[in-house]
Length: 204
Ligand SMILES: *[C@@H]1O[C@H](CO)[C@@H](O)[C@H](O)[C@H]1NC(C)=O
Ligand SMILES: *[C@@H]1O[C@H](CO)[C@@H](O)[C@H](O)[C@H]1NC(C)=O
Ligand SMILES: *[C@@H]1O[C@H](CO)[C@@H](O)[C@H](O)[C@H]1NC(C)=O
Image 1 (tube, protein in one colour):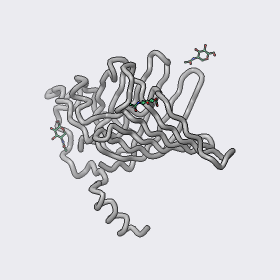
Image 2 (cartoon, protein in one colour):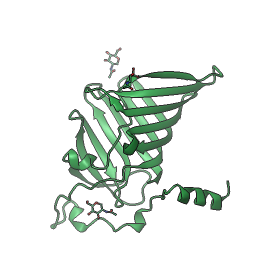
Image 3 (cartoon, rainbow, N blue to C red):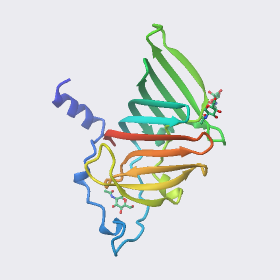
Image 4 (cartoon, rainbow, N blue to C red):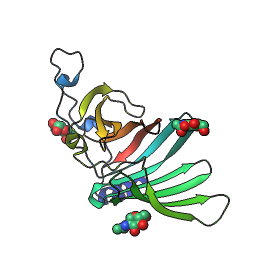
């Protein structure tokens, strides 16, 4: 596809690439150890987006790295994740409209492997590594500001926000100065597991 066609398709779909330089910088009150520091108000985030991502999950017994493409749509109650890892292509459709009170989410998982020319489709409830973040996730959860930090794929500092997701899982959400999420980390105390996720090539 030509660049112009690509630009046209992108514009037609109403999506804009994120440019931190086009938004006002963070105010100086957000700089820790500055005399004027005040915890800023948690922002509403741009919740309808699609992005490339890389995710690393590990614990005592596993180290799993995957990367691919995410579509996050609170309006449709859906997260779609297309990913590649360890000789497998997989596509997960997390239907947050169908979730349990324990926080399990219905997932339709389609996998393609080199061992077979037929995809495998599985459907059931899972503990998702890909939470659906609505616009007011930080506000509703009374997020605590965690400082301005550097992330792998961002030239500028981003704001860290700490929440207890579902009241049980400590999650740090990273938000740039356009109020766009650029990734999240969490730690599952029950599973003794750490997960870090970085976004790049984000379109809101
Ligand atoms: C981001 O959210 C903050 C807090 O609500 C707001 O003051 C700021 O104007 C927003 N920035 C952009 C670029 O939307
Ligand atoms: C790792 O494996 C050991 C031995 O099977 C098990 O006892 C332990 O609970 C596992 N740890 C995690 C975090 O799954
Ligand atoms: C919710 O998901 C489960 C597991 O896939 C499925 O059995 C059930 O029919 C779904 N319920 C609705 C209302 O879609």
